Image 1 (spheres, rainbow, N blue to C red):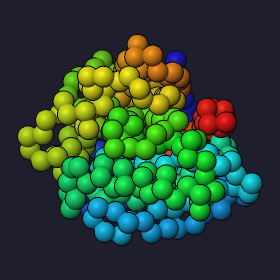
Image 2 (cartoon, rainbow, N blue to C red):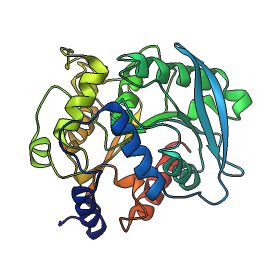
Image 3 (cartoon, helix red, strand yellow):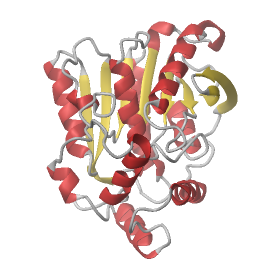
Image 4 (cartoon, rainbow, N blue to C red):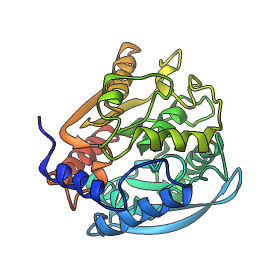
Amino acid sequence: MPLQTGAERFLRMLAVSDQASGPPRSVADRRRMLAGLAERIDHGPAAAVEARDLILPGPGGRMRARLYARPHASPAGLVYLHGGGWVAGGLDTHDGLCRRLAASSGVKLLAVDYRLAPEHPFPAALEDALAALRWTAEHAAELGLDVRRLAIGGDSVGGGLAAAIAQDPAAPALALQVLLCPILDLANETPSRRAYAQGYFLERATLAADLRDYCGEAPDLRDPRLSPLLANDLSGLPRALIHMAEYDPFRDEAAAYGRRLAEAGIGASVTCWPGMIHYFYCLARVIGGVDEVLDTIGADIAEALA
């Protein structure tokens, strides 16, 4: 179907503003851009969701996290990893989304402020994500969590990190992985990568610059820690909820991951939202229907972790 009206308007706004993607920007610019965008169009506070900042031990030292829960929340838990190209984003850029997911799902959501590149290159983000997940499992009782109902999730590169953590043998047992517009294959081109390489929020050149900052000049892009879709064996993984957007460069790899999981005997629910773009889940103030989408995603999480 055509681009959703709000999404089309948003992309036109980007094209004529200082947010427009041109040549790869500096890391400082990327961080300012995402922070400024979130400040202007964040969801706003979700009713009756409380947030509590925590400090967790991490491989690189103290690590910030934020625990979201509505009153009488379920004992199920979701450890959440934000997007931002491995170089940008944090607790504040995704605060509105995390509040919304905690409200709509009823689970306790722990957002992780993992280390960013280039100051902390690959695999620092993965190490932090694994450490946060293991800490959550170890402290489940004091957090009021049922360790048997623990999930990992994330959006964009955070979705790729979540999928990689779900494959890590050092991860605690997981009941679910929740992947929103995940980036899962950095080694291969797909038709959606080519079709939406420019003008659909996350540009090819920007991703390439982010990847260099994260991995250096000659990474092994077939490493499943970077490209979880390319793992040899997906058997034994937790069930997956995969949500992608029709006009997203990473749509095809998300769909392919769902197919591979199904072929491995893993329950995988794959939903493609028509007319939507990458990052749409954070754009409820400018794209109509996003709140309803997040209600659906929250209900799916609640059902899967019931």
